[in-house]
Length: 165
Image (cartoon, rainbow, N blue to C red; front, side, top):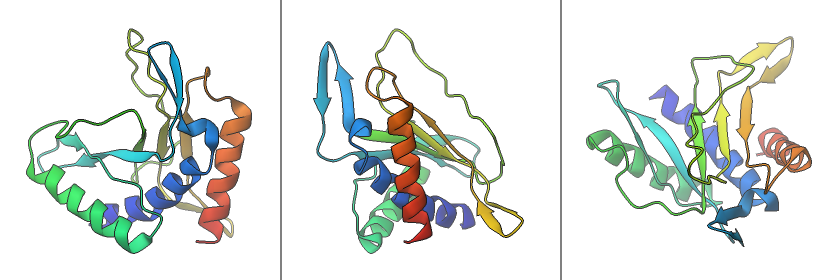
């Protein structure tokens, strides 16, 4: 699927940028703050019947290993009818792809009874603006662990990775 390729080519640089931005690796668990060594991924995967499921994709810097594991996980999620197929820890990033939509803002539903410090990254439809290639990216972070400086660091790293894969 074209959407799978779009997702994969944006997800890996996004995952690398997350793992290179220390503030995106902190998690609040109870009253404790933890710094994880590696952040894996949990992405929304669409199904032919209009439903979706959440995936778990271990972080690999190597594109070949990543593509192999991501493809396996996408197939498994699509063959399942479960929303969440395995226990997913806190050392993840929530990643969504909306390749049909050119957006300026995305909002994520939140359960304010639960302390959720997992960053959420959403990418949108690729488009041209003059001679520039553009991709909208929305980032949501918990302000107790990251702020504008850290989001800026993430975007700077992501842009470098996309410009020089």
